[in-house]
Length: 273
Picture (cartoon, rainbow, N blue to C red):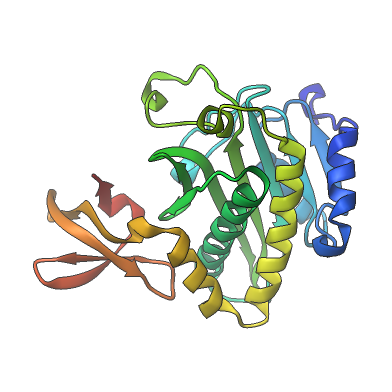
């Protein structure tokens, strides 16, 4: 472990926020590693998981040097502007890690959106597959990475990054990204938000494991108005064709209506308008 990835003592306000929700956390953040700077919280959490860390083991960083989103896109993670965390999950054994990761991603979207709404009052929405938006701009990204062995699924590392404060965004993000404080015009308590996000994750994932997928998916649809009726373009034989979103199926795939027919799509096959 490099010097940059040496854990620090967690801030007292974060510990207090976690302690206030201890009854709802069900072991989440029972193992907690806090860093000032880290390469990627998902990478650290994956190492913890491989070493046997329990469900709910949590890695938090003030900044990431190699933060990433879907398909290894960079996640802009500067010091002091965001909340960056990853959690080790150990779902029930499955031979379909991709399906589990999809259901975990949908559940995490619900949990984190509810946490933002509860702690800040900001009416964020979910944009398929794994973003939270405020005012049409990206506020949070979620990344679930599943690890499988000969016996099937071993663990899932769930990472999320929330923009708390304004930052000097790189050119590709200017006008497309925002932060909670930019939207509200006031400071927010990042520790309370993180603790509430972990508590909601614990509760929502427990509901999912108990067979509550339909209720979770219903709530996801409520929080994602763009998943039905939004104008998009879909890739068809090398060209982009107009379509409209038509919901999400039980596997977490986006449905789109094009030329009178409903199709399932993956993220690389769609452009939002």
